[in-house]
Length: 296
Image 1 (cartoon, rainbow, N blue to C red):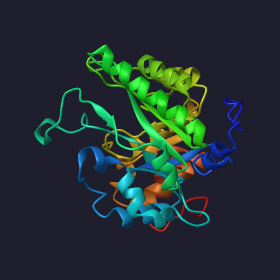
Image 2: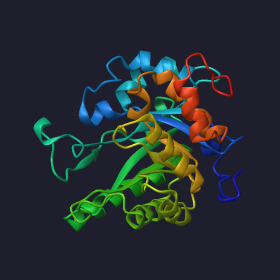
Image 3: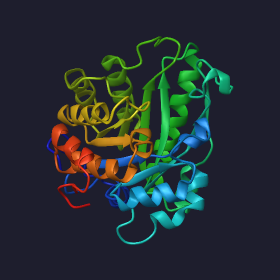
């Protein structure tokens, strides 16, 4: 395992086995596709035919997918069989990501929609929950932490991986959600609550993001956020996070909304597992007929 996380070997055998289907034990990294957008914001490009996209990205080398309970039930075949990608099930829902014209709210609230036991019945390797910090109402933040802590306890009891997504997004955060100090605050809190893996925002630069990886004592995978204007920016984001000590990505729109999602998936996978440079990744992305270095 990576020297940055010498204690990553987990005492819980169930977690050790299941999380080995999420984070590759050989590279200690993961290329995960976030595919839960429909739960929070409805129909968007790239997820219109969920089964087709899941199958394409699985074939292209996605290590795991983050999905909502309905997708996990309906498309279970994607996750079945030897060599299939890992299944991470989201246990909560929020209304904060919808635009105002789509009945969204400025700060929003969330609720648990499934339990760890439900995820276990569906064959999940791990579950994931949000942990928003910076709410205008301090009790709202406290209630969320309480719910996250209970999920972590249930994961421990059932041997399911616990992934926490700390995000500074409340009214107190204002227009500075990618402040590395805020992200690091949430990351450390999530580790203390019992996270096995973290999904966090990227601060925008490797130098500042080192505050986050230094604060966390569990592997950090970055969220992709909104779709970047160009593929180069998405690749630079992942490369910068890796250089700062992150262990991979939880990216959605920058892959499944790419002109060629399978090709983008292969390139992202090579960037993460084979330490491909951004320039080499762009060459593979832009040159017709050129395969990635691992032949995926």
